[in-house]
Length: 146
Image (cartoon, rainbow, N blue to C red):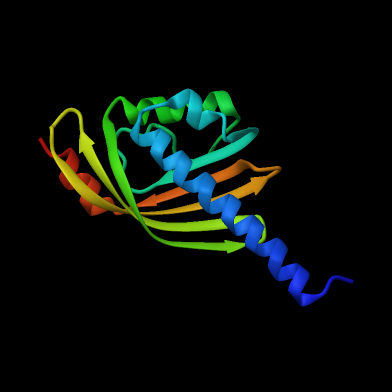
């Protein structure tokens, strides 16, 4: 049986790893580096974006790195993530929740705004196996207005 001190030390290392990975992935997204971003995903990743995304043609989660790449590619042809301000990161075992404000620019309308986003991630062997992203639907609709 591990002591509480040892468990706390392990949790601290995992938290630091997850926080570092989250910030790296947000930076890669802002740099539009799809290959770099995909390198952080497991082959069997499940990805879902929830919100009023007119440009997101998938009604539910997509599975696999290739399908996730296609889904993200569709999104990134219409919006550009300029940056993200992370407000909170909560780590519970292999699960991570991130509350952030993403500054997005719609490439069709040219509008940009801060959009409230919550990401739920699950990690296995340091790679993301699940990513669910919830966005402020009203803010996205305003961004998309022509």
